Length: 471
Image (cartoon, rainbow, N blue to C red; front, side):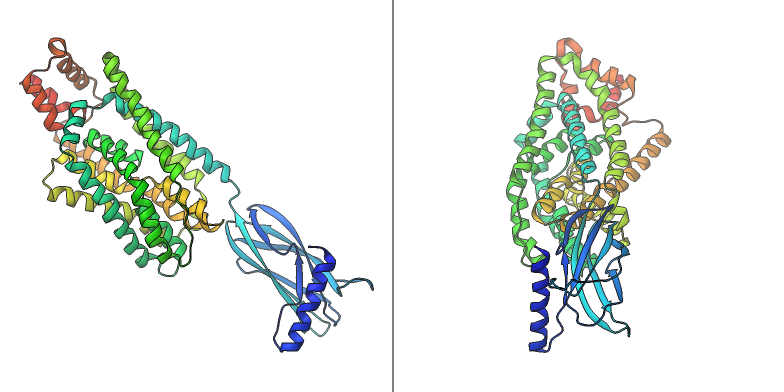
C-alpha cells in the first residue's frame, strides 16, 4: 500500500469516528503488519497520523515482550503541506521468539494528552527451522538402518505364528487407536483447559501410530521384537483410516472452526520407510544366512546410538520447547506415554499374553510416531500456531524415553544382582551358543529348539538357548 493510500485510510477512519462517536484508531502503519518474520531479526515500521494537535512525544510497546520488543523510536516528524498526513515516524522492532504479538503506538501533544493511537499485528517464527528438518531426515535414515538390521534378525517362524494368530497386533491396535486418543483427550482437558492449541497438539500426539523407537526399546527391555515390528507396521497402515477419523471428528471440537489437512502422502512414506528396509533385511537373512550373526552384533549398539542421537541432537533441534516450557507440558510429556505403557500392559495382561509380548504391547502403546502429529499441525495450522501446538508432541518426544530408561536401568541392576545379564544379547558367549544351536545338523533344529523358539520369542532371549544347550 502506498503512503498516500495509508494517509487516506487514516482520514477515513477519523471521519467515521467523528460521525459515530466511537474511538477508532487513527494511526496507520507501513507495512500494515509483520507476519511470519523469523526470530532474531530486526524490522523498521513507519507510522502515519492525521492528528490535528501538535505531536511531541510517542510511546511504543509490544504486548508480549517475550516474543518481540521495541528497540527504538524516532521523533515525530511533521508532514508537508502536500502530504495527506500530519505526522509520521519510525519504530524499530526486534523479533525474539516464536509467538503472536501486537505493537501498540500512542501519540501525545505538548500537554501530555493522548491524541492518536493504533496497533499492528505481528507473528514470529522459529529462527532455525532448517535444523528441525535436518534432525527429521537424519532420524529417518537412522531408523531405516535400524529396520534393515531388525529385518535381518527377525525370527520368521514367530512372524508366521503371529500372522496365523494375530491376537497381539489386534490388542495393540485397540490400545493404539482407542485407548490412547481417549487418554490424550481427557489429559488435554485436565492440563490445558484454556489453551486449545496445546490441547490439540496433545490429542494428535495420542492419535498417532507406533514409532520406530518402540522396536528399539522393546529390544532393549527384552520384549518380543518380532511382535513389536509387526505391530508397528500394522498400526502405521491402520493410521490411513484411524488418524483422519480422529482428527476430523475430535479436532474441530478442540479447535472450533479449524480446518485440518491429513498428510496421507507422509503417512504413505512412513509405511514405505518401514517395509523396504525391513524387507531388505529379511532377504539378506534368507539368501545370506551367515551374515545374520553380524547383524545381531549391530542391533543393540545401533539402538543405543539412536537413543543417544535423540537425547543430544534431538534436544538441540527442539530447544525452543524449553523456552515456552511449563510444568503442564512436563506432566503431559511424561504422563501420556506412561499411561500408554500402563494401559497397554494391563490390556495385554488381561488377555493372558506371555511376558515378552506384554512388554512389546506396552512399549508399542506408549511410544508413538510423533512426526505424524508434527506434520499435521505444521501443514494444517498457520505459523506460528503449528509450531506452538507442536511443542507438546516435541516435549513428548523428549520425555517418552524417561520411564523406559528408568525401567531399563532397573532391569539391568536386577539382572546383575540376580547373577548375570540374562537378557543381554550383546554377550558374545550367548551369541555363539545361539548361533551354534541354529546351525546344528545342517540348520535342522531339533524339536526341543523349535519349541523353545516358539515360546520365547526367537532372538529376544538367547539366555534360554544357553540353558537348554547346557541341559
